[in-house]
Image (tube, rainbow, N blue to C red):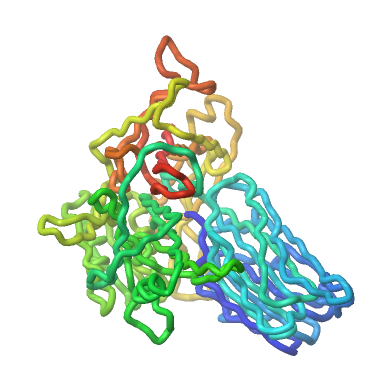
Length: 620
């Protein structure tokens, strides 16, 4: 499971010696992070009550003439029985607390780096702080940034850094202000520093970078890397962006964005980002019909609208718009930054509010779950559900008390052996209307087409490529940990059911060292044979070192490949320094399944059109 933030809570106090903060929504095995800042006393007076908490980072008062206090970061693993709130203690004064629950995180490999600065006399003015760079222990996890300001001269607002999402802001006006932002970590390369600037002056500021790596990789496909902002390319394309009501599909208008990127992936939601320039009042009035100026206008805006991406008359994507940032630069120009996701993300935000249970073939159970969601008021997004069955009967049960969503439940169910893959593909129907097709494949989605790209000293389509090899995401031994059986007498206690240990026999025979992982079963099964099957599947797919492949290719005027090509195969034929010719043939000639594609259309920045391809790892 790839680590991700499940929920966040927080609380400020103006003058107290303790702060009680609600536990964020969490499940057994989640990692809890507590970030606590105070403006008085010693660091030793700052602590959190309850068992299992450990301090993983701290920084003292950076003010030249401060009264003490500082920032501490604590972590613990959620057990089977946790209180509804936790209490942090401090010297009497102002304090802020933010608590995060992280599913799929590795508690023992959390990295915390800190930095700080203070205002200099006589004004003691400081309005920015840098969260430092860090080296992630693996290529999957969550990158969390924390900024804290002391003694700000008024109410503080924190702009969200590009690529990050704000999880929580807490402040005591005139005393303390804190912001916590995060993004998905998709590389083991160094993550750079991120600067936070506020609209006020402070006497001191702290900046923390917290990396929570994924505990394990339980999927046979890797987490796709991020898409670059710039790569030289060739080719051209004609794009149109239309805005529609998410539920009714009603046309709202066209938009003309710049710096557009969008992607689709198997196994997770794809992303959309774009910028809308506002050069004059006429354009502003047109855009305001789609992005309302005022909160009281409920007719449109993020959460209600979707953008359809058209290329040369073909529908290349549909993205639920979930956020917009309207901002004015110091030069006076106004622009709106849009962000959105494919409809898989919508499923991730519809909570399951009642217990559900279905029996039969796994695909039939999945369809029943989606039909139940669409039967809810305001949740019928008109999915056309692919027919057929996989021939694998498997019950599906979802409990409301788990505080899960339809998307999370379906994803966990589909990843449980015997697994299947699914995507939501927008398409133009026979009668001209837009269809949202839920498509599936068991165990994988397999396309019938092969797309060929070449690279040689004489030129080609491949602009750049990468192959990342990560032994820490694999292993030569694995055991799968399932759920904990229910017991009638809670005082008797219970322990999770586990599989037997499985070995990567070929690697061990070849002389590889013994190293491994205990991975969590995505469905928390308590049936030992199912856990054993999952362990066999894991070691077959991820034994040894995991290899993650990606490449960027140029798109011509009429490419065979599009975002709907997921599951097709990409054949790369390359000759270069790393792949010299072999017997007069190409040094690299390999076909791999396409599991993700990111598109950068023609723009003033790129000048050409390109696609980044995420390719399935080669199985051992």
